[in-house]
Length: 271
Image 1: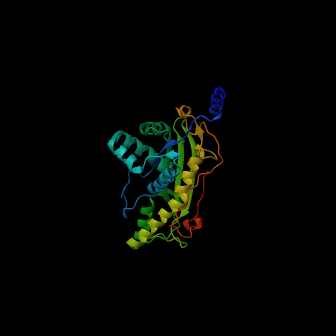
Image 2: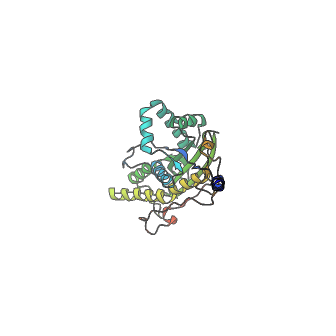
Image 3: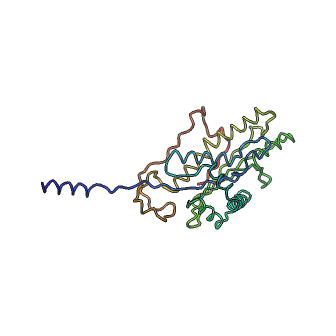
């Protein structure tokens, strides 16, 4: 009997202690989060589209938790001071890629997270640094019958607000319009087609790549780090990791037939 008790105790000592998988909270803030139906076509702004896809990709992995954009909007609407602070931060980032670290820290504390992901997207020309909304460019192209090589640029930056550091930033570009530099919509159906193209580009390229890069910054070459629950208290993102040599798997949308990155224009990845 004593031998069996000793054997059971020995086996228990060999068993690994129970641990929980680490998850990180990230606040995703698109530059146009408060701009809803704010263009001629009443279409969602590109930064909102990309941000929604990033959040959806996070949800598929169960490793990064991000509140839905509707939840963030409701929180901002209920707190005018926080809303004004957030709009100021996003305005600076969208116009000149400026990061107001103290203000971003205040925002992250208000939402109870330690990381913030800013996303902006705008249309530009090679001869001007003026940034316009993609749907504004589409409206101008129709009104003045403009044929010019416009380009859409999407920027993302992941900030560790505990240490005030940029963990990762990415830059994605694609040409707007067809091979003849025509970016217009003479009818509602053509405008809807342009919108669908942007949606497909975000889902298959920009949103998916941004989400994958963010997860890999938290868990380099791993998706299931395991540590004891107490070890994660007051720890900044990227700490206390254990490798298992697996990579996040983002399945492409099966509804997108013959998906090819070249169909979405030129993409420049920033790692």
